[in-house]
Image (cartoon, rainbow, N blue to C red; front, side, top):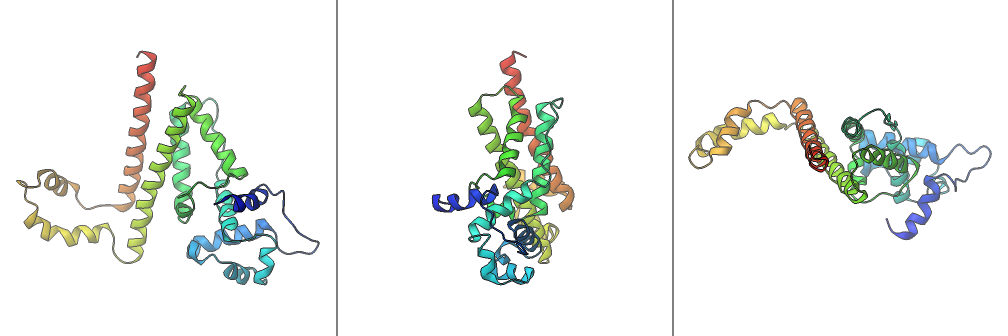
Length: 246
């Protein structure tokens, strides 16, 4: 989002420029809520001003009185859903437990609203909920004693991990909905691989192929997320222990 768009969307996000008149059935909040519901059901690409106007039973041009365009609408949608499960992490909770809770909350939010992955590909404008989340996440990592630069790097790493693992989960769900899932992939490959993937030429693949068994999408995705997250946090913990002389 470039400077001109930011200058329009930031007042909307913080509700300092909302325009309404007595008897007006529309508001930024109502438009955004309808847009989120439409995106959840039909995908982000179906969220157009015309489609929203039909859902709200108003004229298309009346929406522009409240929301100037699609970039602003997307920013409002992102900020809206970010506030759904925004709970402070108690001060009594250690940094590791706090980060695990935050990461799982983020994963759950992406799975509820898969279209969010499209909006977080670039740096979003900072509305009230995005700002509150950023502060909450920083406070969890403040407990580690890492430097400001190290906390920023850690947040980026964790964010990329969460988004990447959820993207693979969303892609797998889309494949299942289209009638082709991980089990189908394995079943299609197994007869062929049993002939060409011999243990002499591909020993590691052969061992993995023979021991993996039939995949369970729900269990596998949750395991992948938990295992990867725990190992990332192990690395941070090793660094902290080394610095403390343990």
